[in-house]
Length: 318
Image 1: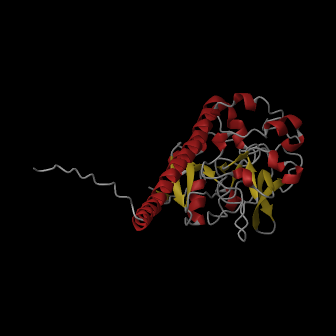
Image 2 (image 1 turned 45 degrees about the horizontal axis):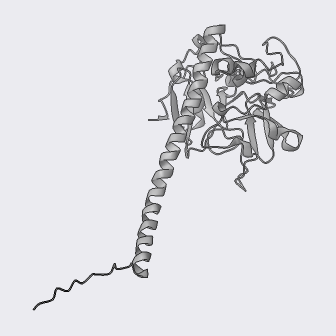
């Protein structure tokens, strides 16, 4: 007589060594995937940044259609000089607000915006000062946070001739203790050409789409709109020793910058970005292209001028 015996096997548990091996494998996989995830996120942020700057170019074209001219780079001194005490100092981005679906914000600017009128700076106008505190996402690069400046906010960029032989780009700052930290900021400014207009013929030949009280039409871009820079990225200024952000640009006042300082670092006076070794620009035809930070200044001057007549190979990164 036989007896059927059923044997049930117990479930075998993981050993500690096996668990550690699995954890190590997961850790390696995460380490391998993380850079790819970060790269994908940065690519998306860079694409959004490019779209932001493209919108500025399209808005400038719409302004040109409506007014038969481009907006001024900023309402500063003419002829060029250091003192901006009697100038509105409102920059190009403020003029573009109605063409960026921000008519409500534009209507709250109470500073006189006429090209042929001179008035005290916008910082002394209560209505405009309050309006300048709006934080507009379109003016911010997703890869950067311009609201982390430790020192203050630049309220106007102004280029002038500093005798005997120097072009100077000045940034006028309201420090954080005086209310600079309340201002809305931007990562984008207009391109003033090599030096803007400083009343020196050899330098003024490289004038860009925007400078103090500029008054050009798209048709004035004789070098070709597809060959001429119109808007570019900027971070606002870092301390090279501590790598901390010191300043940011206000969208109300930081209108345009010349390119003569180059693209070499994250200085407040340069076009630069947080996209590695490239900077994105919107050309005057509305296309967005990237330039490597190693592009030399003579080339930058040529592609930023509207009618200097120099032909250079397109330096943009394809």
